[in-house]
Image 1 (cartoon, rainbow, N blue to C red):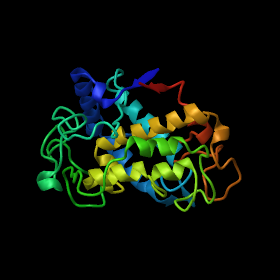
Image 2: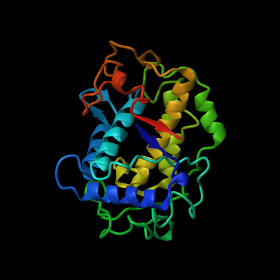
Image 3: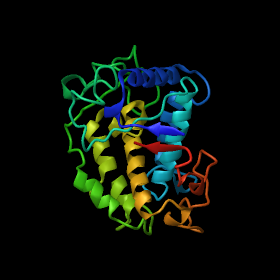
Image 4: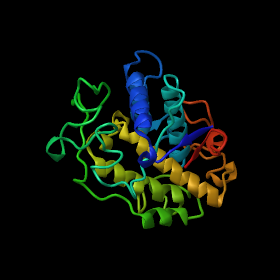
Length: 273
């Protein structure tokens, strides 16, 4: 079983191993390489075959859980010891600390909004952007120029909501944990972090920034904490079935074949420390 750690608890060797596996997945030229994940997120960010799989729907959390699992498997094909770490942005907010160290994610963009200049993903030669709606060929960040990072109180607000989601199961849902966590309702930690990092993280091709996976690992951890309190069973997911244009609990999380019910309980695959 995999153990997903806080980025602040990673050893130097673990940081090095993670970066190396990410770079190898990027260098892979066929199959589910790094750019496959970028392209898949871009494709499923919007409506596909009448469904919103990845965003602004009930399936936001299980879709990304499966997405992260497949990405983690991709890394483990190169190094079986690697697991996804999570960035707890409530506590880790300094640009001089994790995950922004020079041996891990690197820092901000040039002049506060340009190409990243430090770390293993700085510059086109080290990390070329191949799949993007923008023309930039190196990774961009604009950290802290817009908005603020979520607080512990924001996370607690989400954990205290006992209902997973409500109709119409979109960004217009006026209650439910999912929409508060994703961004349709306050406090919106998921969306706020994307905007706070800026650059590629604020676009549909956000997985171009490896920080995406650390952020979404933390979103998954928050959902796991919610499940630990309110229940891991498929019955906790809404809608239950027969809902047009929404991914029901027994429907596949395209492009994957796994259903929501297959991924709601992660405890047999990984845990969080």
